[in-house]
Length: 347
Ligand code: SF4
Ligand code: SF4
Image (cartoon, rainbow, N blue to C red):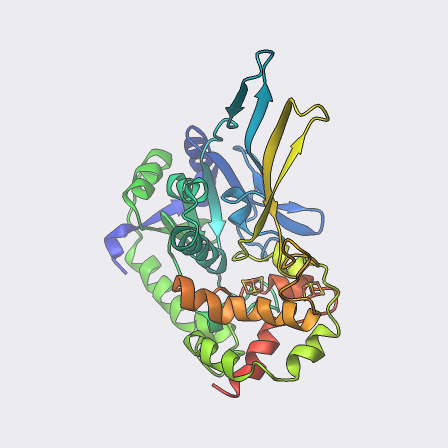
């Protein structure tokens, strides 16, 4: 931790930061929405909830949107077809991203760089501005970020914050973080007392995060392979409704469908990409009607293997950040954390 790169930032300057970012970015932050918190566009004066339980949907929606028009086509009177791509939106600035969701953005990048090389997603990630924030306590009972190693993660943030109420301590991780910060408030190094307080809080923070797993995430591929024929898959699949909620809320789910919609006379239309999920019936059905994973047991096991084995083996990062969303929002309380704990016995 480089002390001279940690600045004190009075909370009352948050609006100045939002105003500064708003000149270049769509500024997005957690706000209260009904009984949940959600990522929403904010302006100076919007009540931003920097202390928040994990949002229903993760920030991946700003980089790989839930529905996105890839291009539109139109046939002219002369019979020629022209194509146009929708205008590019302003880049996004995210304020207050927890370690689990920072990790989710890293996984998103590693997937899109290593597999399909999707520049639409990686360009948005490159152009974004991110203020990460440390969690002092688990943001919800289902979280297991400490076990998955994402509690401490600060990448890919430009600035990283520790919240001390009236004052935030901000660590500069990228040059543009310092630039933006200097525009929003005079750069003032954290005092010796504030640094001592930060060190003390960081030393005891782990005690607030219980451990749930008996093994590090690097052992998951071996543990899962050994448990491939375990009855735990049938036992969980018996309760699964194939609703796909676990896919929709996950920060590391990347699957999508592409479909065309056109006018009846075929003169115009659009190609659209939208989120899909491996738990939704028909996801693995191919032309000719063959389904590679026709049973719920196969589908559920695939989701867990994808996170714990296939993603680390193919893209170099475990595909679960321990955010706990899929556990919290599963209508039948199927828990990836419990499944990891069960297969861990064989690691
Ligand atoms: S949220 Fe639960 S019930 Fe729905 S598909 Fe996922 S595991 Fe099955
Ligand atoms: S699998 Fe569940 S706990 Fe893991 S990152 Fe996805 S939503 Fe979060």
